[in-house]
Length: 296
Image (cartoon, rainbow, N blue to C red; front, side, top):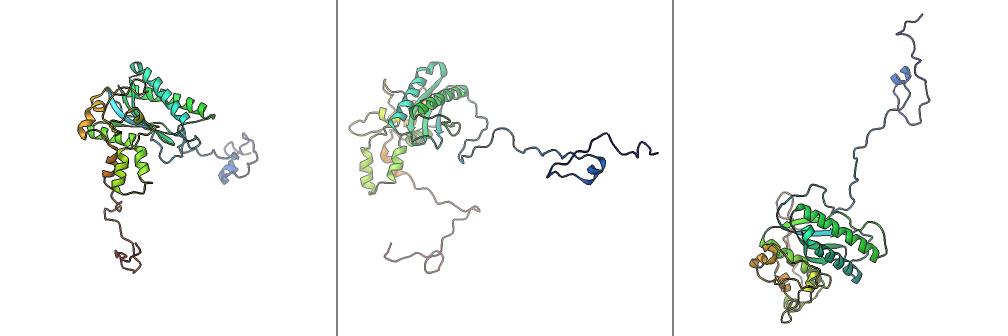
């Protein structure tokens, strides 16, 4: 007779092992033929976005006073080009709706610039909650309007909005120049002319039709941004902060499109160890030598 400890275990039924399952020899002796549990997935929850310039999903900073922000929104690649008459009409209707609810939301849109696949905004918000709710309502209006205008369905924005606070007069002036003259900076690259001709052409450059610059009239045939309030029929809101109303004028005065020619050229990138970039070999084989031929 076998003792109870030496008796073979018959409390478990032997079942066939599935194909591909790894079972140890000890498990076979003890009658445990079930496959091991699958390892848990390393990443759970929301899958990472595939866009390389996606906004990090971290907690946004809080603020309790009226602050100016530079906000940008990028659309998906499947959406048609936004710089059309239909795209502009949807944007201005959405901005008009945001302007009518300014007293309730505490959210104001001061300037905008509509590009091919993204949108630039200069906004004011009384606090972080007003900024979040104002941008959420504006994004919903834009998504519904653009889907209806382009006869499509689905997602419109590639990621959530990116907001950067503006805290100084110099930064406010640079932000205005970047947003309102964004189309000018892109057009300069395609113009084949010397600096004198470019300056004369920029002096009488017309404002972008897909930006808030078209609501600022020209004076004496010259289009400049001098901080004048928007007209009554525009979808823009009047600024409330001193920085957006007149503070930026102390950092250089009104903005002229010809200022884009006076910007410094960017410095060449440096190596990781802090040393200047290495020069390539010339045709003669000497490092750093320059070609002095007349073919340049």
